[in-house]
Amino acid sequence: MENPAQYNLTLRLLHWITAIAVIGMFAVGLWMVDLTYYSSWYKTAPHWHKSIGILLLALTIVRLLWRAVKGTPSITGSTFEKTAAHAAHHTIYLLLFVIFVSGYLISTSDGRPIDVFDWFAVPALGELFPDQSDIAGAIHYYAAYGLIGLSSIHALAALKHHFIDKDNTLRKMIGGKTL
Image (cartoon, rainbow, N blue to C red; front, side, top):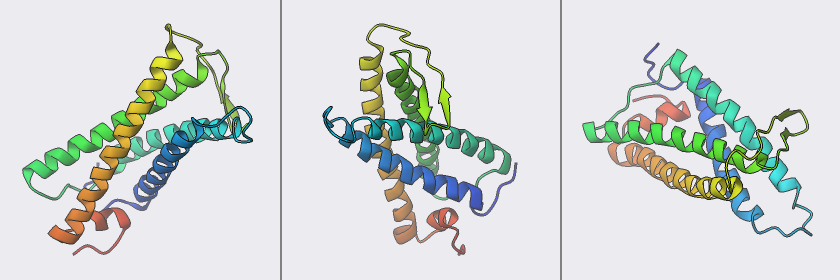
């Protein structure tokens, strides 16, 4: 595994695609729970939400494998900042997988597979435990809020490093020249 000076193009693209998808999925998730049966988006929004969620799961797995093979730059900052950054990164990935699993459990509890943009279907396991949709729905909801909160702190930390510490932390992820 390498220890590069900055993130490679693949990891930078995967990071920003994930960031945009997570923010978009959070916003759409909040919006679609209030849709009524008579809304033209009642079936379309959940279909897109599920499809993008499955693709984001695949992208996250690719991202983790790519990171393992190609390595990542070292984290800049104090011992506390390095420890906090590692903990935040691990927690972000954990929350993503909690959201993926809970979303799957919500979507497939009725035994129907998840159709991903009509390209392929992810098979359903059905209801594995009583009140699966409700329990998984609550977990999905709180994990999504946790992910947005932690991602916001992550972004603020990057901005702090860029504007206050004036180090290369943000430049490593945007591909700019390092100092």
